[in-house]
Length: 113
Image 1 (cartoon, rainbow, N blue to C red):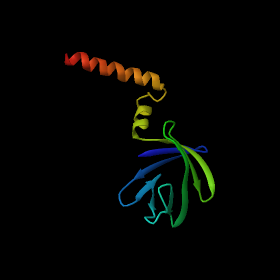
Image 2: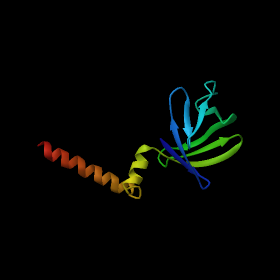
Image 3: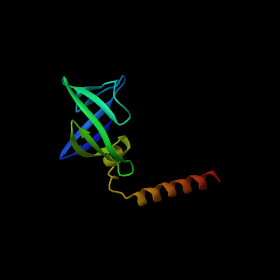
Image 4: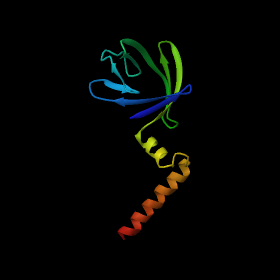
């Protein structure tokens, strides 16, 4: 599952098999005749949406989409991000997370000796 947010809206996206999925419980289907890796056509509620990925910042987990000619910058959270939110760890900086991982790795190495 992914959570996508932008323009004071939030969407839960579940991806399934055969180019199908759900957005907030509403089924959608990705047209298998999409025009490339960054451009595709989505059908939902008998409406078509032409979507192009304009830019993606994987480190910041943000994507800018062009949907039927309208530009939408959105933030994306994957299952790991959602788990961190649930555990109250989403506000931890990358440095603190890296330190925690490093400490865990050192502890595991010390335990093996």
